[in-house]
Length: 512
Ligand SMILES: [Cu+2]
Image (cartoon, rainbow, N blue to C red):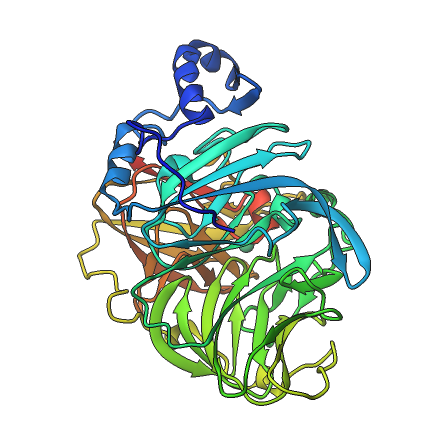
């Protein structure tokens, strides 16, 4: 939870403090050693960090002065929220099954962050795991050195270490935070991040967050074991492809079949219950925190009016059901009837589902296996959504076009590629500060890929819809436009956790 206002240290109000700053100083002195070994270590008190080699020549690094200058131009409200996120081993009670896993604090919902737009977040990450970790603030257009990508914007925080994030949160909306190390976020290392807008009319009675997640840790193999299996090219266990030729995402939905699907860290047999009164308006902030599962979401007996996509307001659009890809968010508003209703998120193409229950009156709780008829009615498409006034990217001629080919590798070991290269060692794409950039995402594979760019929002070329994560369907090309206004080195990757680890990542670097 966000804490009370914390005083700013005098004379140091806009500068990052803590290990990174010291690490940079030591890094400067250690450049010769880094050139020899590619990796260097430094000790700052109890904290030890591994950091990658110096920045490639000619690009803006996370610690360049322009990153600090850009932060100074962000509007700060004068308020600061201080929080602590403790990454640690823990247990989730899944309807009586005790799942040992890794969590922030006591789990995704207790670690949820709520902060005002324009406020500064001071977040201390305490690493009580026995492996290194980081926090990434998904969708936030923040300063590059606080983005939480190990080896790119910061050294991973080692076991026993801490790191102090500090940045201004620019835009209101529904976001989330998660580890950006390996497949750690397919354990429990994620939480909602809600940025409130004091100027929003707030035409609803309840504001609820629903976080969806595919779950295996502690009840099936660990995510790292799954990654090893996938890499080997063997099938069996969780590596069981989900085929669904009739889905927009088809023919191949996923390489993985998960034993469980959770909503707000609860299984369908023991659902999270939202209590309201008949006729009240609920704002539901849907977040897909899963590693590899698109969900088809419907609210039994109701239609849903979509008001925001990836945190950005859209012209209200009413549908029966929507498909939410990995890392995407939709805010919907519903006027709720009298009774008990399931908000069901069915794993697309599969058999499992996550759900929460909305109760406004008496009546039996719907059964865990409920599949509302709305799931097969009118499905939201991107083309239905248009940015609300004030959320459009101003029209400008394109200065630079980048083409990114998404494909599956042809070697015996499974790889996923961008422009025929497996990240993180591929050639970055580059832009210049101030440019209008068009990126053509060309999907030459048989699977859909939710592509996420850090540090920016983009506009879909055909509708102008603002997003930070866009699903590129099999065999299709999606064009996006963005304004290069946040200098640094930024990840651009598939948000299927396993596709990313198997190579589907590159970086977008600002040239100096
Ligand atoms: Cu992918």
